[in-house]
Image (cartoon, rainbow, N blue to C red; front, top):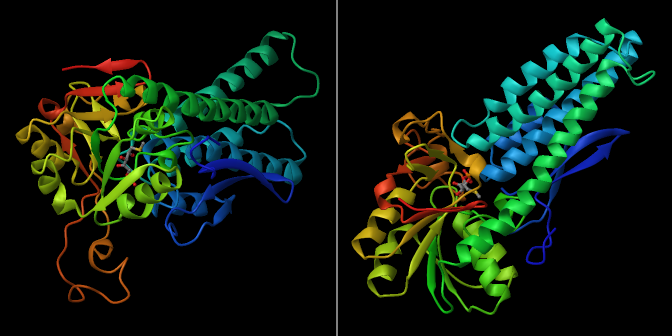
Length: 367
Ligand code: MRU
């Protein structure tokens, strides 16, 4: 929890004596605040796919805990079924679960990054257990492979969670160096508290400035088609007492031209080695507009969002989502003829030439 925002996006809980993943269902916001307790691979996959939990860092935290929760439940099942505390098949389950969860959404690198990180910790625990079993080294009495693996997963997932909270605060402090009191700031999508477990990435410098009485005027793009700006950013910022104005995506040029915007800050889902950054669809258009009006465009993201295996934005896989999200999902009645041809890429890539700086927890990268 943080001082700006009184809801936890992701946390661990218990259900029937076993761990479960608890998430704030973001598809219901701003009209309903409802939590879900999930403990099956399908329900967690569905929650990530349907954006019940969303935003690259929050997806990472949820996925880390998800691997732990599902493996712990499987270990419990195996123990009840076979009585064994060491089940090599648990490692197969772990690998399959990891691949399954990673496949839920392809663009946000934090999903894959977090899952691979907890799996690596589990494999290290397995290796240590096997090594001691072979060499006769000192092992903890009565602690089988399963418990060690489950413990390692829980510790690593909790570490990702703690680091995420700290990372947000550091991004906020670093990003604030670029801002001045009274500035008008445009943001796209939601890269705030709801997208992380801390105070957000793109919104973190704004919250840090707000704490110091900087009196920013924030403009939130509604962010078609899933309305993260309207439903989430304007909700969490107004709750925090920030002066936020909601605009339609196609109004960005107008507010820039009218001199209302002095900086643009967005988040990122994956940043290539050359600085090209994938973020919510529409971001690249905002960046191009900002260049035209001489407004600095900043990307704020944890260093875990930087994917050095992607040389440039061309290598970033862009998620395509069902066309119904464009004309049906948020309306009482379809707003286009049934069966209309649609194209619904969830992200776009902003060329690094439009990015004035990338704000990370380690500092600001300049071109
Ligand atoms: O599809 P979403 O809502 O998960 O997309 C979110 C974004 O594009 C965010 O800007 C990005 O994940 C950064 S969140 C700190």
